[in-house]
Image 1 (cartoon, rainbow, N blue to C red):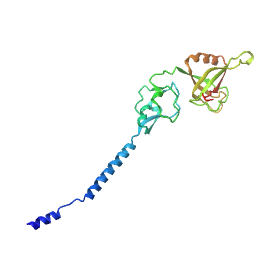
Image 2 (image 1 turned 90 degrees about the vertical axis):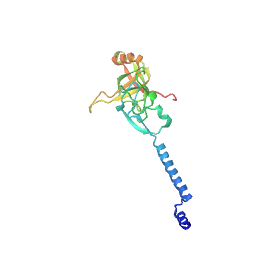
Image 3 (image 1 turned 30 degrees about the vertical axis):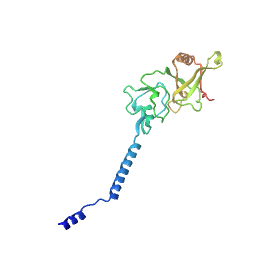
Image 4 (image 1 turned 90 degrees about the horizontal axis):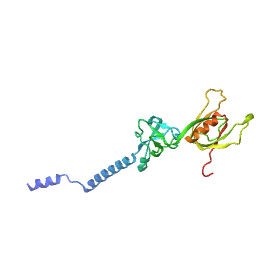
Length: 209
């Protein structure tokens, strides 16, 4: 009887402590890798500007692209996918093409105090004139015999909303420029256009120049 009991004890399964430690290490490593991968896959879907967006422009969700980015806490400062209401948003400051759209750059209503005026170009546009650029609008009143008075700045720091190219292969109209100007300057600029005054756009100097 004692011999049988001894044989049973010898035949019983004995777990090697090293095996248990190995299993624990493998399990811990697996959990660690899963946690790391989960932490890396914390991208959020935010909106990105397909084209340069200028103040006063109304945008819908379909006007924007989307991109998955890892911003951490900074993600709260950008427009997340699904945040654009059915009526859209109004751009309050320039967002350049390819940039993420900040929450601070949109509003539910147009509070920019800007209006869009189309100004025909009298000749080739200066280099650097494109949507989002700022220009000074110079005007010179037309006088008798086709002359003009000395020019002066009518609007400082007007923003370019867009460039309108002439249609057709042959045209003498050149291009026109959509300008965003303060509403209080609209009447004066329209008067200059109606009077056929000379109007030229000059790239505005930056604050450091």
